[in-house]
Amino acid sequence: MDDLPLIVDGDWLQARLDDPKLRLLDATTHLKFPGPDEVELKPGRESYEREHIPGAVFADLLEDLADPDAPLPITVPSSERFAQRIGALGVGDDTYVVVYDQFDASRGPEHYQFWAPRLWWHLRLEGFDRVAVLDGGLGLWKQEGRPVTSEPSPGYPPATFTPRRRPELLVSTEEVAAAIDDPHTVTINALAPEAYEKARIPGSENVFFGWLVDPQTGRFKPDDELRRAFEGTGALDPGKRPVTYCGGGIAATVAALALARLGRDDVAVYDGSMTAWTSDPSRPVESGPR
Image (cartoon, rainbow, N blue to C red; front, side):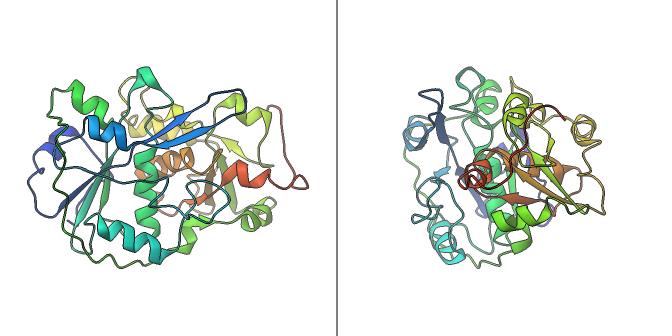
């Protein structure tokens, strides 16, 4: 499907649930904060088994689609590993993908709308553009009275996925460090303002991912509101390269998707983000308001 939008609504998806070319992926991952400085990540398979959109299969971002040997969770694996695992889910060169997560405002951040954008970005990183995010995820789908099921999905037949990695969509710590004084690169911190003011990569602008989605429905805000959120940061300047980051490279993809809506399909994500940056105490950290 060459005319696939970046973001689709429930009507669009429901009309295509029986399309043999569609691959519907539930990318839910649970994020909890058991203590002040504690983060707990857990695959969302149990939530998927409890209820999901009919026909959807579960995509495990935390284990199957990440580098098992990396020191940080949800780190981009090799292209070969990703191709093998995503192909096993039925995603192949002649299919198209809609990815969603189980957004639930009452249970945020455990059920928040940033896992689907992460898989959207990861597929694009490997050269696969026929991927869209379901606006509002499962939460809005249910609010609209659409079908859900707990019945196991028969799954899709295994497929051949040909990776064509775009290295320009992924940046390393070394590249971020080199870009601090580069006037042609703008780094966007997608964390909440209080986290941004506590510690950030020097020179970063702040566009909180929570400003980009409706907190009640999980829908992305209209393009004019997205544009206002990024105005003044330099991210919309065609002469600058936008790089997004957050705490661990997940919420950064929400900002990347929002920028793609505004025509910037060249946004790079700093995988590992502040967790990777602060792992070396010699790296500079800026704090306070800008």
